[in-house]
Length: 264
Image 1 (cartoon, one colour):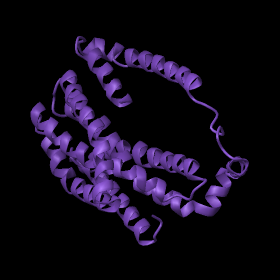
Image 2 (cartoon, helix red, strand yellow):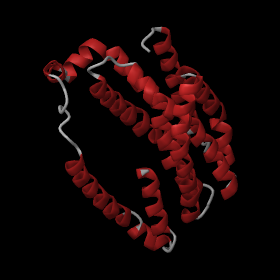
Image 3 (cartoon, one colour):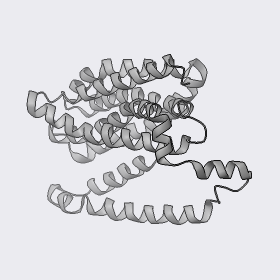
Image 4 (tube, one colour):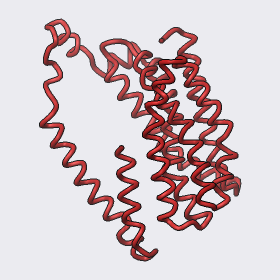
């Protein structure tokens, strides 16, 4: 929902502005709006959140205090790395599909910025609906089946779809981005329960945060950089799709390895 709101704000800023005005104000207005939202969210947390130890027994409180990052790394570093690898595909895909692809659509194919953002906004709304669907599918047909199938199908479609977006027609670009959004959205929905089950009790919150930080920083943060480097090296505007394919393969392998070692 945060990404959906941010894209809507950017679209509202880009729609009435010409190129020069957009360069000046296109980043300032979303920045100020984002700061306001963060302040409101921080205030809501202070009002709503209760003491996390409320309702715990003395033994549970003592066990909670015994959990620390060093203990987690010493005892469960393989599991943390496995969960981080599982999260690499949705992290890299989100940055590539939801950040790089709209810029690619505007800069390379010449589509107007507000049209590219409109395509992006529509598919972010779809992503909001698809993630819970992925969780429902994981409950119905199984976590591993949903994870492996969505990763395999999205990886297979990544390069053709990226070329499809390069046609420069907004309707075709919407369809191409939609296919990728559905693919990694289903994976992300199924990943939530799988990641929790792969980590030991008593350290799941710490483990999930560490794994998510690794996946977001290394998988998500480096994905656009790797995509730009591939374009520069190959002169192929669709080559960022290879980053998605590699991330899908890594996450699928991690899901299979976790399943084979009975971490679930």
